[in-house]
Amino acid sequence: CDLTCYDNDGGDCAVREATNDSEYTRKGAPTSPSSTAVRLGQEVVPENRVLQANITLTSIAGTNAGFTNTWVADPAFGEFEVYGWGADDVVEATFQFCDGAICGDLLGPITVTAGSGESDCTEGGGGCPTAGTGDVNADESTNVLDIVAIVNYILGSSDFDDCQMDTADLNGDAAVNVLDIVAIVNVILDGRVSSDATSAKVVKAGTGLSIIADGFIGGVQMTLSHDESFSIDLTTKAMVADYRTEGTSTKLVVVAPEGEEIFTSNGAFEIDELIVANSETQISDLSFNDSSPVEVALGAAYPNPFNPVTSVELNVLEPGYVSVNVYNVMGQFVQTLIEGQMEANTYSLTWDGSNVPSGMYFVRAETATNVVSQKLMLVK
Image (cartoon, rainbow, N blue to C red; front, side, top):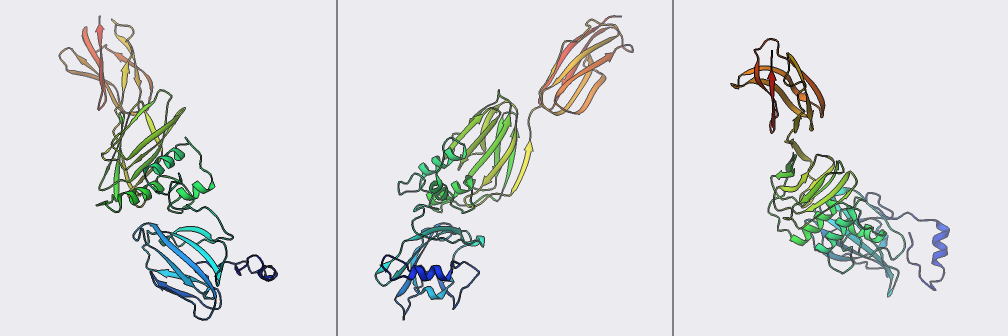
């Protein structure tokens, strides 16, 4: 596309509109008459034309983070490819077309992950000057303050405009989440992560949740569902940790936790959404271990004393394995009233003591973490 139009150019823009040539060069679709490929740092300078394209590519995260270079190229090349990037490089590109000393508007920036196989194009000047940098607070520095701002956006505590959205989306996947945060963490830590986690075990308990990993965890994003009495206490051993509860849903983000514990809680919860990332990408090898204690309670037996039948209510507050047995005063087993995997519910249990002598007995409900009992008096 002829992008050399500027004020008082003698009518080139009219020619462009007449040809209706609006297809922009993109990766994988070379345009005539030819294309070129260069290595990182190599200059390509047109020898016989005044018209030139200034192409600046900067890796803002990844293997070559911090690398930047401007290539001066002949637009007649069509496709312009630069080899040597790491597959994890998040590359920001800007373009400016010049005819001698007269230049058009700066185009871009465009941000893309080098190994994604994706491409993009832009038309016109301006755009968001901080796109893909993570500098959402526009203080010309990408740091923990930007992480806090992105966390607040994820939790719904604040909104982003279009430019802030483009700025926060470091990995170029059109979503702003903890994966973009870990890219900033990687910049802040300046590659000092010794070993990224490749797998992790999520351990859920009635008192909270922990993540046991085989290396560095850059961030955790989670959405929980629960009842209205639920409360949560996030770990303080992290770069940033925050949450927001609305009704029966809690969303939390923990950045670079230093220990295994993510939070402690009061009340039952379910995990609706979970993202665990190392310093570069989401960890897909996740396993889960639900070690939540099963809480049970026994209602008062009626009648008591009894002859020979009595009933007792069993309240199972959490689904799990439960057994209810009757024992004599010597602690000897007498009878099983119920046993097995049980859903959270209230059960009515009946014991017929016709085949045992009068005396005191105990009905005992047991789980892996809880035991409750009650005295029974059989009088014949």
